Image 1 (tube, helix red, strand yellow):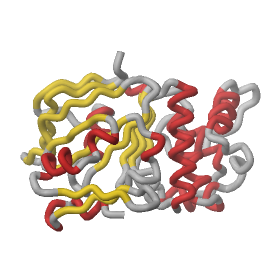
Image 2: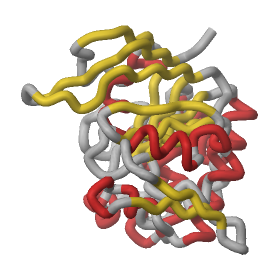
Image 3: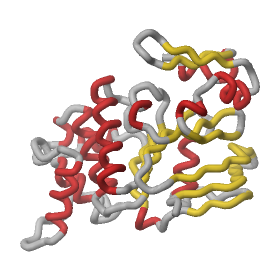
Length: 258
């Protein structure tokens, strides 16, 4: 059974239609990228899955909130906060309250925190101050925080944004491994498909007030994107294998030219 399903879904915010006629199925253990230009409604999809944004019409079926892990955009506050990486992960168990929980003897939650840190490969630096860690190390611990409550669906909003290319590949490989080993479905919002393309099961591409979903080879094509944007779009492949999507400047397609 699918973990997340949308049928003929439409979202309106402030009296404006963000997107409509969206169909999507996300199965357990799959890695899905959410792509599209700025303002197309990528993050809105995650909020619909969280139950934070209602549909204006159509159907959505999603796991209960306790079964969904969420890593929102931007973490500038955490980057300078005076606590260790392990404390940040522990906050994922202790709810949304700000602050570091006091240690207690024989606390069974310690074992779960340690398991999750090991799952993302962060044991070596989890006891160091979070603000002293590299961007890639911080991102692994933030993903651990979203995973610590054993979600069935993991939502990641632009986790690669501030990372260099090697760390983008490393995080994508980590997410793919978690999908396979834990059976968790992952939706990851991204601007550039290239660092993650080899790890994906499907993509959801938002543009033109709607979206298309399917295998990357089916969605990121000239025919599909031209139909989606309503204007001629070219999909080029460079000699090193990177995809470049180019089109009219006012379509937003230039946001995906890399």
